[in-house]
Amino acid sequence: MSGAAADPADRMRELLAGLAEPRRRDVRHGDGDDTLVGSALRTHGHDAADMDRARAFARALFDAGLGWLRGPVELGGSGLAREEIQAVREVMAGFRLPDLSPLLVGQHILAPAIEVHGTDEQRRRWLPALWRGDAVGCQLFSEPGAGSDLGSLRTRAERVEGGWLVSGQKVWSSGAHLSDLGELLVRTDPATAGRTQGLSVMVLDMRSPGVTVRPIPQMNGSAHFCEVFLDDVLVPDADVLGPVGQGWAVANTSLSSERDNFGDESVALFLRLVDRLLVLGIERDAWDDDGLADAMGDAWARQFALGALPDVLAAADRSTAGVAASIVKLVATDTDRRVAMTAADVLGPAAVSDLGGWGEFAWSRVLLGMHAPRIAGGTDEVQLDIVATRGLGLPRDPKIRA
Image (cartoon, rainbow, N blue to C red; front, top):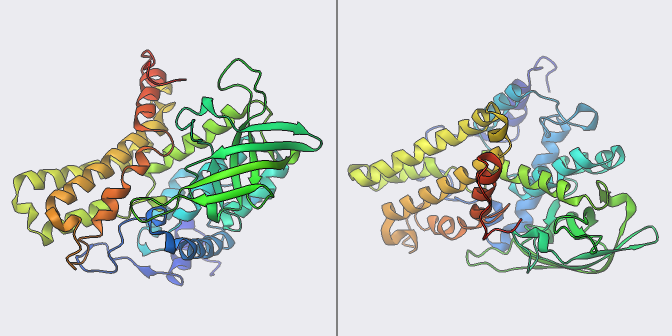
């Protein structure tokens, strides 16, 4: 790569020119394939190939110093400021790139917790591997009896010489069947009175003896979510993340990062939905219908607002900034829902009947998959309660347990 291209955006442009094709800025009906969902919602048979492509692309970015844009240089990051990152992402938006969403959990959920709560040795050991794609991460929080109500979790870790012996079950762990590391939330002190006390977070080697992973078939043809069984799994002391018994703070770092990333197109579960909706409206003459035209215009306006929302919230007062991730998630998932339902109105029966038309039946995958993001990272109801109690100072909803 030319030494003259010192500007990060120029370096990214030069790198991608040799790796990818430019993307048409004007999306047209019939251009490219008709994929509308990211890898996390693709059919189960595509999982391994999607992951291989994501790893290869992450490796190329990282080796060029452009994989972890805001990360510290000493760990392989780019050390870029917010404005530089935005400029780099605008360059990336101009190319047809491999989907990096198979690495979303490791890079945007597990890695932030390691960065904030890990020791220097843990940061050196895990962060470069996660951002280069050498290690893939998953999240092991939810259980059959503890979904959004994580304070009810039952997975236990008992102290043994040199570490902890873990037994229990986790569920809805995205990509666990392809993961190397798992962010594992366990109860290390069952005697504590508080439901969110006595919890600890450990980074689990998913190849450890006693770990069994089973993908769960879903109605959209995917089996990306998994259940994970832990039968006397030994986790060394060196793999405990943060202080023992203070796992709730570590888990909240991950959950906040997960919610915040719902507005990031580079790791989106749905691919350019609004652009494709607007083109679909032209193809189906939907712009002649005042009601459909209003709905499509509303979708565009919401997408535009979502892109500006993180910066607006970052500049807000402390009470608003403290619930920014929940607000971004709520707006992002609601926008996707509205887009999907508008597309269904435009298409009619073609939305769920494969009549052979380009980009028609593809929307059925969106209609089936759009509910998952409304649950991931905490349900809509939990996010609304966070905004109400922490942002507005309102009483907690009695139906939602702390």
